[in-house]
Image 1 (cartoon, one colour):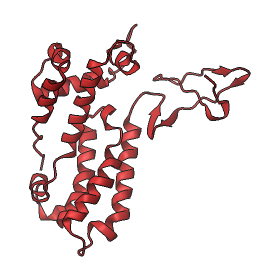
Image 2 (tube, rainbow, N blue to C red; image 1 turned 90 degrees about the vertical axis):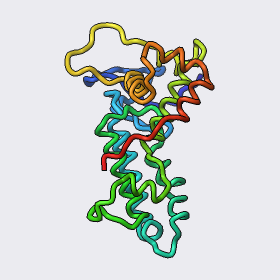
Image 3 (tube, rainbow, N blue to C red; image 1 turned 120 degrees about the horizontal axis):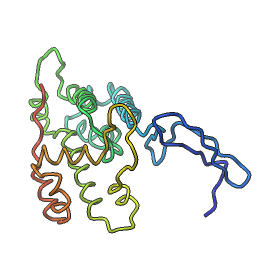
Image 4 (tube, one colour; image 1 turned 180 degrees about the vertical axis):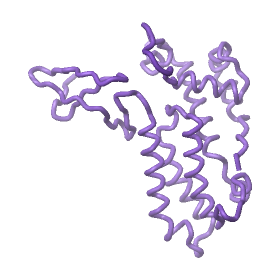
Length: 232
């Protein structure tokens, strides 16, 4: 394998800033705190908050760009507006969502941006005091959080069924060694999704891998996943 030093950078995954001289032949690669790979932002701290902020900002830019010409344009049908919503806005907001750690704050942000677009399509504002559930029902649109949860559980099933030797599966099964650094424990994607499976499907963590091993059984569980009630 040949490495192009002019196109390569080094990054250390650690909570604290650590200097590491990564040398390729006689050249030392520049060390960075963040970089993009396949359109996803990775940081040296290993957190995904920056990437989630980027997704939300990008979706907001899409909404502002399309606001006058599409979203609130009276000559355009709702069907056309929702088609643009599904083909442009949703992929921009949810790109790479399978691996995001979805905290309650993150879910709130995603839902707020999503409903901001849908309210404009429905022609209502916050002052009208129309609930999110009513707007979704009127437009025939399912919650993006339901889409995210399904996708994350589907990817979890793929990881469980991966044969030994596949890197994603090995990373999924890996357990950190050594003492945990002081401070609040970091939320791992596996723990987050396992908790989600328990809350939404009632499958205990000890039974998770056994159930997910059966592809058709796992797929049937995901098809029956009910939407969460909207807060408003």
